[in-house]
Image (cartoon, rainbow, N blue to C red; front, side, top):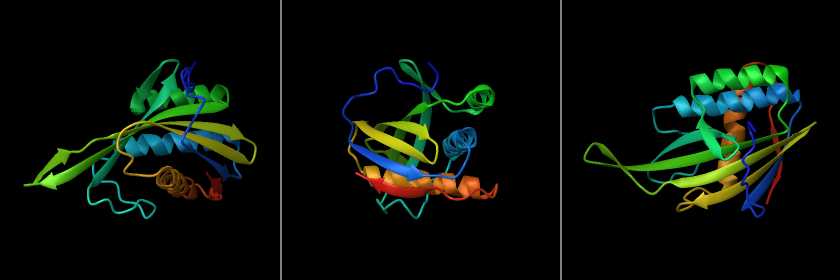
Amino acid sequence: MLGRYDNFPDNYHGEASVLHEMELKELQKALLSTLHKLNMERENIQASSLPNLGCKVKFDFGIADGLTFNYIDEEVMRYLLKVLEKKEICNIDILCIIRYYKERDGRDIPLRFDYYILRFIFKDGSVDVLVFHEKGTRRLSVEDIINFLIEAVNINISKDGHPKLRLRGIR
C-alpha cells in the first residue's frame, strides 16, 4: 500500500507532535514536495536546526510501498501528486538516509550513514511523527531531525502564504 511500510516497528526511538492549520492534502503535498527538493540537493545541507557536526550532511528520502521504499524523484513525485489529488493518505512512512562526508584532500570521504524510518500520522490540526532508528551512528538526534524537517517544510509552505508548522512536543 502506497505510503505505508508493512514492517514499521512497534517500538520506536522518538515521537513528536506538530500543529498545523492546513488542509491535510495540502500539508501532505507540502511535506512530499519538501522531501523531493531535499533529495535534489547536491550540496551540503545547511540549516539552523542542524548542529555543526564537522562534516557534510546530505539526506535521501523514500516513500514506503508495502515492504519497499521508492526514492522520491521526479517520476515518483508526479505519481504521488496524482494519488493525492484523488485521496488523502492517513499515514505516510518515509525512509530517511542521512549521509555524512568528511572532506580530505579535496575529496568527500563517506562516513557511516544513519537510516531512519519516519511515520507521519495526519490528523486535523496536528501531525504525529514516529521515528525509528534502523541503523547507523546517530550523529543527529531525533530532535535534530524533527526540527530540521519542520524548518524545511516551513520554508516551503511560507512561499504559498500558509501558516507555519509549530512543534507541540518531542519525546
